[in-house]
Image (cartoon, rainbow, N blue to C red; front, side, top):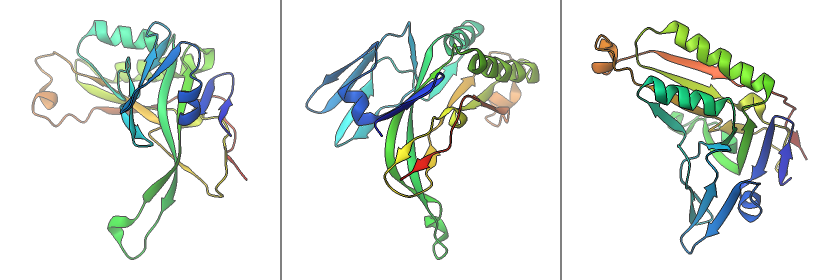
Length: 211
């Protein structure tokens, strides 16, 4: 299955995405890499550079999977983007391997497929979930630095994989880090701030199907 979609999310294999990019994207194929261009007014891309088939893939307008904000203006801008644009992430369907003889080798994962997943941040229900998570975080801090891990696992549409395994989804989240300029944020200045929060985008989901 090359791609899968619902009203709230779309999932496309990386090779299909490069061959036939969605509306608003274009791909420049060079000898050593692929450069993926997008319209930052329409899309919020949160993808780090990665290697694929011995070539690097670079999303030119990507903010990366970890977004840092240093003031209220940056936070407000990021919040508005999350609630109005399509959010693009790179996710991997992996086969987990467990070892009973070597503890260090336990829980290793082999990548089966990589997908570019887009989530409609402007969808009423997704938007409500993001707003609720961000508002809850803000109400829990007072002038402190914090980080929010936003998981999108539950937004992944059903995908058919050829290999008969139950895949574990990796990199299905992104992180927002807010650095307060408050002088009394001692935990941040001394490097041991523990203000961490988790939020989930809940959308239409269906079971992963195996052939």
